[in-house]
Image (tube, rainbow, N blue to C red; front, side, top):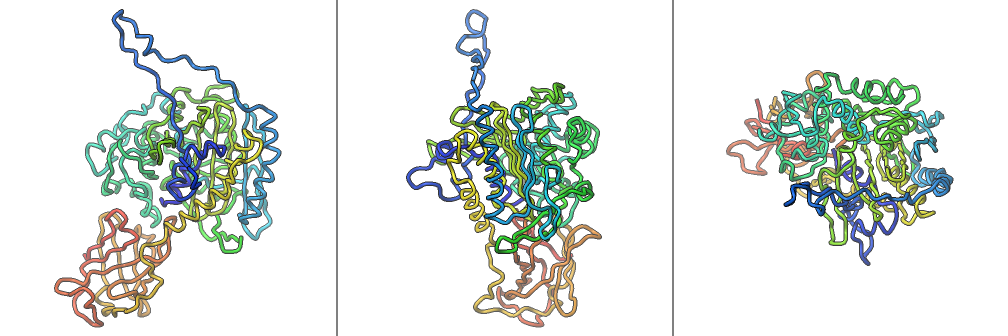
Length: 574
């Protein structure tokens, strides 16, 4: 989990006009600038909740405390406004492709329970002729999360469990660092990122190739933030919550999603199994930029370990059916698929995921797998983004009161493209034309993310005065770590390397001398950000910087700074 994914998630339901955006982020004369404002771009204030029903002196509820009647709000959109926006949507998508070179995009729009738009643009793989269409399967990244909360709502509606039931009731092996949190964390806590796990907990284990069982069983070593009093976007916290749902239904997660959601809706191209994505004949490969608007399909991203949180794949044709279900409050083709009350719980604020940056700004919220916000007309807005640094970006945005929803999928590394497409369409539907340069706004935001993700130490730059390394025997050996497992440092063809990862599937990292007892290696996976450091301890009696070729003894431990983000990256010689 990286900052790009976290910020992309936050901007999955942007205010759909300039006035709402400025009010949301509290922008004054200085205009939109800086990441704090981006982080607030979905900040909306919630309407007042229902009142208490405590009896008054007469023994009946006080009139002032009764829930207010539902106002009859007339939709602000009509068919003509939506048609006008749809007429401009092709141009919006094509403009995004022309300006970025992203290989492929697919978009679908639902209005009043009808799929009114479903198209593909570009190609599935750069340099090949196969085109994207509405049936092309994309990896969804974190758009998997609102899909997962929909599955969970089915289970809750069927009384297999409740949102507020402790996870450990159904997953006995569930454990976090604090025993109190282990005993009390609920499905709702984990699906709203309130379990206390830090952002990224478990993600680096996934990058190394560890499976879901290993990762979830090692989360109890991760430090915790305040339980139910903090918000930290956590893929594996979310996965643990969804796993409890599958355990309660006594069905593996991928099978459960297929049985209770995908098959009933006819979502024949949707799956939480990476193998199904790979088998799809009409699938979009993931791409990263290669300079000058060119892209390359360089990586494969198997997200089975976090399947509920990020492992789904689907087409816009299928996702339009799911949007219809969401907008119809759990019904599809006139038949009830999900209990409306259970589904409705996913659509309301559960946690503040960012306080307002100014008194005039709105607070932003997270529900269960959804960004939840309210615009200047007090209309509910739901949305979510997905981002794989290895080459996928997705977004979905819904205006339930208007019965309008849009989903955009791309096969390129996140640059804000699907978010901008969704925001531009909704803005145009309501105002006739975009009131914000959404592509410029999101591109600038993601550029700042790139800058923020750079390593703290630039290991590509040779220090002014380099201390020599010791002899290879000082570093060679086996090192242990209870979280990441064993690390082996060896010599191959006269050069040091290290091996790390699950047994039988370790990754070899060549080590290059940087300075003294510090070596550099290339970080890998979804969270990789260039060169990282392997810092070997000098050992007892050795002064810092006193390393010399051939010095005796062995290093007692090595710290890998890239894997030490929560203090778990030190490996001790066995």
